[in-house]
Image (cartoon, rainbow, N blue to C red; front, side):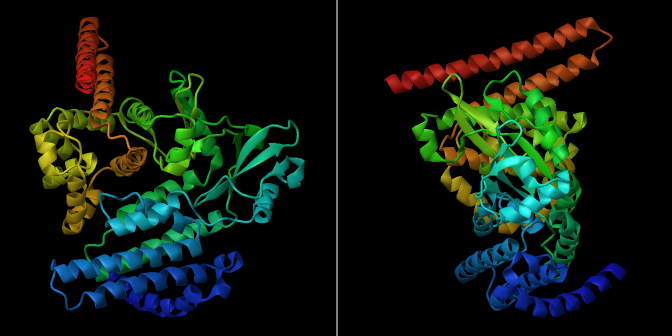
Length: 515
């Protein structure tokens, strides 16, 4: 009760701050980086934008009957202008607000299409910091003049993100070309205040719109922020990832230069390549979209099902491709700041759930969804994991490809199930929340590559699930060598059956094309 009263009084404070914040929001004088370092300015912008968006929804829909044609048209227009207004605010505040925008741009299973489309821009574009300010960060970190470390640093960044930006440079001592990732100057100082601001505004908006329960997103960002602000941790993740994939020559991560790496500066090998969604680059280098999709699927299946250590930010700005030594696509994964370590219990439950989904085993789907705290909303969780309708899940997700009509149906039903979706996201394990985001980003990459390899993707996933479950069961049978041999034989037989099915599909496709 006390918390609710506090939040209600907070709405008045927010409205008051929003009035002054409107000045911050609409005045170009306060658009420079120096003004954005003031927390009251950042809070004012956020409060103003939140207040205007909330008012727009309440006022514009006040006399409209729900789910009529006029209602759907009007709310579609509100979604678009509200998303643009919030994106402008995030761009002006920068830092953690960009990070929140990137999260929103990956919530295809939750947000209206207008929001996802508008915020996806942050996956490839973010406000830039001037090179002179970044040089100051380097000098603070190393305690020596910038030009004693780097003889060159390009003015134009290779990429700008929410917490940092990356520049191509040259090491003075060796003359080696490197990529230098430098944290934006005020991110560390403003980060925790910004997350408090976002949490407060989310709570206020929830009072006005009870279905708006995004507390899970705030908690996720708060939990991950310390790791993402520590570039030494990112460097360790990068090296662990490289060690995991030494057996796959089509996977690579840049080598770290530890002597020039601190919590705010990460210096690494420079690798030339094109963004995974750069169609012209792929054509010019004769790289096939279907080959890239299958390799991404194999890489992430191994991370999720077998290793339990997942890179959780695979948007197009973080995935480069280039011709490998065999002329085929090599995948270069960047930005290793956000990883999720899965518990064995969760990983195996998730493996068994995917096996049930692929095998069209409805009872097993219900069982493993319940183990993930889905409760009576287990059909919704199955739909969110697969990005398919419940009819497709029941009919078998491997039976037919997801059509445009099915994608439209999913988007149309999101507003109807919004309260259930947010309830589910508050209940399921935090590990699964990040996996859902990762899955959606990967589907976005596959869509941009124009490679609807749905059966091949499921075959790859099925193989890794079988391996993970087989290795686990064989490991449990430590005291009985007979049981270990039985499990290994069973796993090999299952993998053989999947491979034979895969070959049969290939032969059938060749025959159909030939005839």
